[in-house]
Amino acid sequence: MGSAPATVHEIRRTLRADGPATVLAIGTANPTTCIPQDEYTDYYFRLTKSEHLTELKDKLRRICKRSGMEKRFFHHDEALLSANPDFADRTLPSLDARVEIASAAVPELAAAAASKAIAEWGRPATDITHLVFSTYSGARAPSADLRLASLLGLRASVSRTVLSLHGCYGGARSLQLAKEIAENNRGARVLVACSDLTLIGFYGPEAGCLDTIVGQGLFGDGAGAVIVGADPVGPTERAIFEMVHATQATVPGTEDAITMQLMKGGLDFHISDQVPKLLGASIERCLLDAFGSLGMSGVKWNELFWALHPGGRAILDRIEGVLGLEDGKLAASRQVLRDYGNMSGVTVIFVLDEVRKRRAAQGGGGPEWGVMMAFGPGVTIETMVLHALQSNET
Image (cartoon, rainbow, N blue to C red; front, top):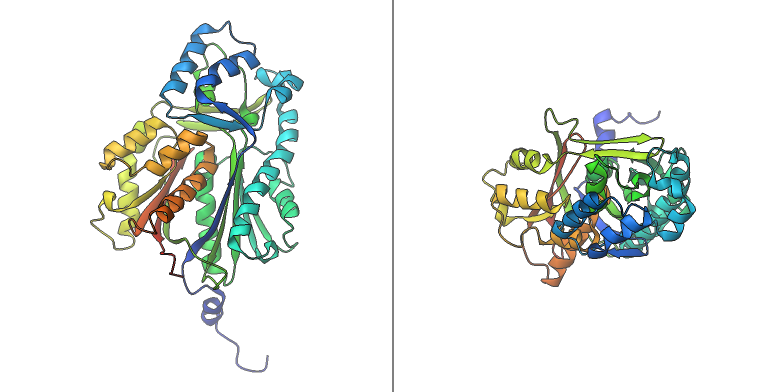
């Protein structure tokens, strides 16, 4: 081979990035149909021809009133549901039709968010080396990642990974995977894209099935995209957050607390009313483990900024109380919940975007260290320690 071959250790060192993975750009998108939360109950029961189920209607009205939401966005509208009346009845075999619609709409919505992120990033889409796509709304291969790559004009050599049915922790899991890719592949630029449509699990109400009513009161549609890379190249690239450390933990004995399963009538899901309590009992341990791994003991939770997945108002209230957080610490999460509802794994990207907007509005002030967290089936808790950069830092 000519000169003496490099050792494996030397090769690995040259292939890895020098610095930590960073968030370089963020983009978000929603469908055009927007329903005010105080109108949703009448809208839903009228569309599903279920107004005779007065007890369930009253239940949904109470959920909507207490939700902390003002509006939500949806891909499905009256025209689509009128053309597919089987969607209102979960006992009818409608999965094929739902997947057909989602297979086109999910990557298109993701492309809208990704295009914003790429424009902010300032480099051509062909410079993206990896794509991590998360959704609970697809059930087909090739999947939405390939369609998204085509819509954006990514290179044929882009390395694609799909995360399916991770639910509300899908966005955080995707970002942790992107962090590992960026730090272990010098020069890598990872596009994280998350896109979810509630159409895959939309049904009419059923007596004795409160999960459907709870879901109808909480979930909305959206897409989020993040460009992740290490060692930003100036002056084009500007890092927003350094992704310092990430962990995942599963709360023991909670496999049945949040579940999702594709059935003949669409996506069947279950969310236990014990989830806020379960998270409240586990979240501080996750934080202590994450910061302890960095040798950062004695961290005061009120000295951090927070990008917390707003699974619902009860979850935010519980975590706020358990950690003793001051008013306003979860303002970004509450704002996203108010404006969009719970968009499953997409939501944490909206919250991250809201955090950076609020910091920019303050002139880049605020806590230097922060944490991003999301929760989902398992019960799984994703935690990522973040370090915010000032506008003049790289």
